[in-house]
Image 1: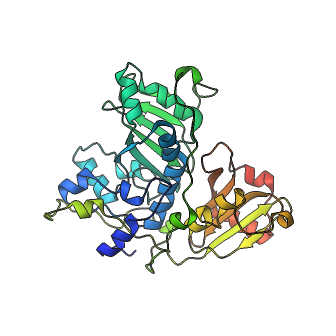
Image 2 (image 1 turned 90 degrees about the vertical axis):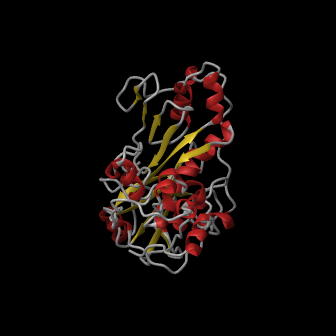
Image 3 (image 1 turned 180 degrees about the horizontal axis):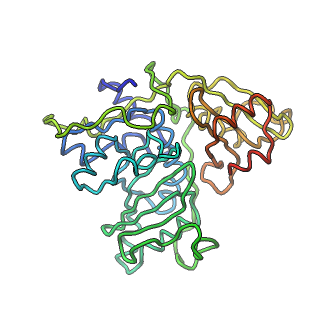
Amino acid sequence: MNILNTYEKLEELGRVRLSKNFFMRDFLYSEIAAWHGIRNIPENPERAIHTGRMLCENLLEPLQSTFGRIHIRSGYRSPQVNEYGNHHNLNCASNEKNFGRHIWDYPDAQGRCGAMACIVVPWLVDYMEKGGSWTALAWWIHDHLPYSSLHFFSKLGAFNIGWHEQPERRIDSFAAPKGCLTQRGMSNHGGSHADQYKGFPAFLSAPTAEPSQSVYVASPVKFAPVSELSAPTTKPAASPSPIGVSFPLAVAPQVRASNGAKVNYRAVHTKTKWRKANNHGSLDSALSGPNGATALFAGKVRIDYTKHGEPMYVLVWQEGANSGYAVKRNASASNGVKTVSVPMDALLRFEAQGQASQTELERYF
């Protein structure tokens, strides 16, 4: 696996736009990395960007649209930074627990991908100073956003918020009332909780970035496919090496590049049951680029919608991976779609058949 090893490449990645208001640079600063001289650099930038974009578009943008500017406390962590923080009691869980969470570019033990950030919502700080509880915002998020997990802390109402391919839908807290607020199976999990957040601002959906600014043209650097990312390739040093002024390393923007494996894109319409499009050079392009799945459901792709019919599903996978993605329309999501993981054997079976039934695809949603 190639490692980003020039400032120019890092600078290029820092300019990658994850959503309307967030760039990759926003999530790369780490106080642990800055103080202890450890580089906070993804080993698979393309994967980190894809999961980071899902986090921003689905969760952070609608939060900021509704409640005003949010503050990023901790975003992406490299395995080296996270492991150092875990071993030195710096409030980091183990790498195994943070794969698919703060470690954006490695899947979890089940091969599922995700991304997490610790944020502060100044609106919530003011609300709590007036006597309100963090639980009000927790229930608002539960009712409005496709989060996977929330974990609230005692200072400034800060909380971890995570997006995941297979959402857990669980809320925990170290702040009073401590413990699990809700999870699947609890009697309070379903239904509306509007009585818990009376007087909150009206929900505002996330703004959309201009396609020309949200698509990143990769440099010709190759990275290992996601299927090879079961564990970090390197371990952090036993002790950090002094680097003088460490800020540029900690803020470390990175470069996102294709790993060279072919990306397959298949759309299922009401008329055309298996439409192929092989012009995508990356998973990110196929999922959220100007001709990708999100744009297709928004009616922005230059195809004959009358001829093919309404899009029902999009299937995207990269050769050599263990799984791919299925996408369908979801009006309640900020980007208008829902994305789930699909095993590779199922995708290859659909490809061999030249079709995938709605019954089969709905099993994954």
